[in-house]
Every structure is written in C-alpha cells, then in structure tokens.
Image 1 (spheres, rainbow, N blue to C red):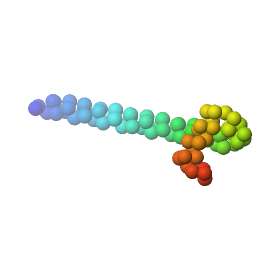
Image 2: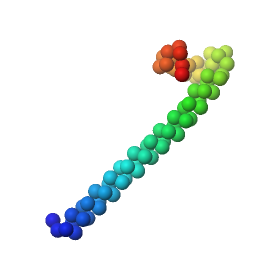
Image 3: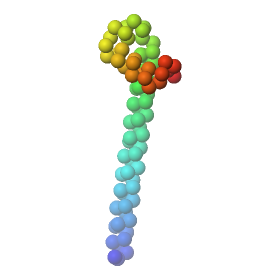
Image 4: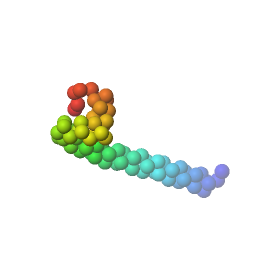
Amino acid sequence: MSDDEWRILSLRLRALMHRRTAAHLDLAASVARANVALRGFVEALQRTPVEYVTEHPDLAELDLQLDGYYGEQRP
C-alpha cells in the first residue's frame, strides 16, 4: 500500500471511531434522560395515595412489580 492509501485507511478508521463514540454518548444521554423521567415517575407514584393505586389495575400491577424488585423498602 502506498502512503496515500494508508492515510486514507487511517482517516476512515478515525471517522469510524468518532461515529462509535458519538453513538455511545448519544446512548448515555438517552439513558440519563430516561433515568430522570423514571425517578420522577417513581416519586409521583410514591406520593399517590395507596387507595388510588390499589383501585387502578395498571398502577396496582406496577406497585407489585416495584415491590418485587425493591422489596417492601423502596429507595
């Protein structure tokens, strides 16, 4: 391979590494946004009166799932 071909290959490899890093950072940003949203949801759910949660079938199921994951002591 000539020097020009090595340089082209090197630049393409660098571009690939930058795209990979950009995708990784985009995923990290999405996870951070989801974390904030889920924390807000859990806090709102914890503030909800227990009577409402037990009456609403979807929220009651979620409450059971959270109990199964965290146990009776939630963070």
